[in-house]
Length: 431
Image (cartoon, rainbow, N blue to C red):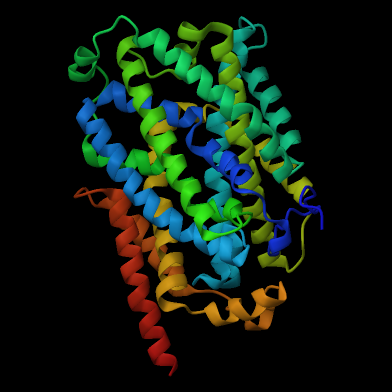
């Protein structure tokens, strides 16, 4: 089978065969696009505008630890089983209908991300055109173009990553040199932030919120990896470049320019090239957002109806919704959006990891069907995993309500421990 050809449905509700796996660099470039994009630059600019340098980097360090641990675990599972995130959830505690819940959460969250990124794209496009189109028409045009691109599936992700990752890296380097040259770095490091103050725990939650979506959808991409080593280094390289280098530079640049507005930063320091980078960067990350959102909806629809739905039509519908969100102004709620994601996604990830690696509820079933390249049939697949759903909701509630500690870590630990207890008691009762 030709490795350069992806089947029509992009394996929306099936395993990716081992014969269709890609080389390390191909998948890593696509994956790295999620953590070396403008949303990470936006996040770094927010931290630099509102936190001291030491507090900002502590937030990045601890947020990256949480992200790295859970992401590598999920990535290994996705590679081993060849399954997307929402499909994997069926046999990681949530069951057939429970995975519908996971797919919907992924889809809604990524639609939010699509709206945020498309709004940044539209700002850059409108700025470059001297406000001739206006923000609304710019957002509609950019959202439509991105949606059409993503209908081509994983092939489009590889194509855009090869163009945008190098371009983004070069321009960020150029902007950093142009902005920081002539400034006293020691003064910038010790400067008092002028934005609204953010605590370390809130900073960690924002960092986790900025990348936790990437964690949950890692199997969507790691299912194309050839082995565990590829998954491990894909995640580590993305963390180093995205969290520490891109965020670190954004923190310093935001302090020099006294703004967290990335479009203004790009326009002031790199002119037309900077605006072109805004456009290419948002294109690169938004194709992933829309791709995984469509996979989540495809799994949800198949779980509810028992029928396969065409990937192309799902993508077009989701793109329309995401574009509408950007026109409605979701960018204005960026920090609040990250905070909610920082406590909503970790519980789902915790439940899946506990079930797959500790309780191993369906591992024998997955192992048997993987050898045949099939999925477990409907009769052998749990219908709904109430312990998983209850634990996820409880974890999110605790993360939102409890002020002590780091909300994203609180939600992850509460959901994981509670699910372990509930599932163990349920298994004991069935005996």
